[in-house]
Image (tube, rainbow, N blue to C red):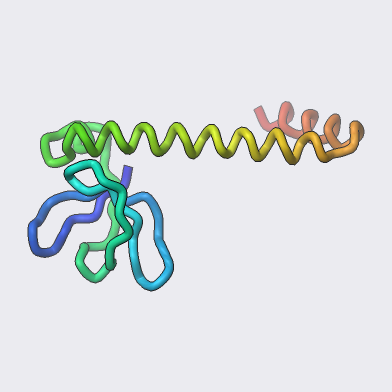
Length: 103
């Protein structure tokens, strides 16, 4: 998990991604997902599980973060399945063999 600390309030916001126009997509302490100017925050930093479980990250933030990650993973799986189906049978076999060799 990555966090950005607000320069004024010193509260931690969960960082999701960079957005256009010098903004970050963040989860606020109240659990809202918002695109906010990055000038308002310290740069994103990676935190360990203990910090992510601490009181500086609210339960609302943790819940929204888990939901965001899950929906992102599901969307990725759907895309991979869609692209896989567009491959020829030989391309599918080659891809599967390549993936098995990497495991």
